[in-house]
Image (cartoon, rainbow, N blue to C red; front, top):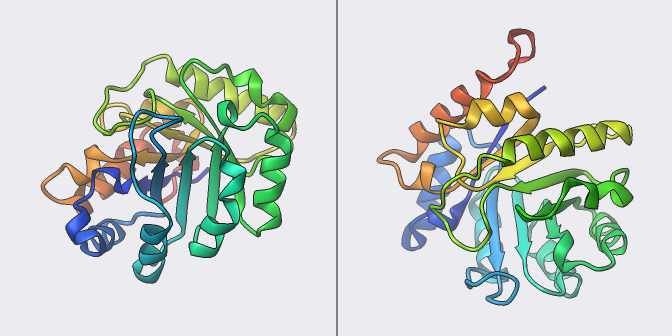
Length: 228
């Protein structure tokens, strides 16, 4: 089992975004997480296609695009063309989730489904065999700096069990309030991709914070499974 760290630029300095990405890459970031918000599905507006295009030119690691928007299927091709390597849509925003995931995969990207804190893991059962990853929100989406919802740990375990039952070893991603205090607990529950925003970009040194988060996350794994 390998733990991937995905710093979220939601808390980065947008005036120096290229430098921010370079810093977390020096710290060993595996992915760059990009939260796209439309002010409708969540009560905030963030970034769009031009920023993804710009990041693609400077990032050395894949771009993990998280669409927190209504009607995501209308924008899949544009984000794929902008440079996304993997893309998640919310089950709550995708009434035809199977079709939306299939569209993402047809574009050559890894397809993920995201769940809000109040959405049960069982919602993913009909598409469990199609997922390349599943994203558990451990805060209510929309804003950086929120406090981790403790029940999210058991939800990660439930999603992991659901995927395993479907014969799918796709990783579970977790996003929201992740830091060095809870990283080991979520990896122990089955999370393999950890998204962190303020814990990394709100620190004095984003490279060091990225490295420290990985180290803490690895503590949640049995010794034989720990990998850098």
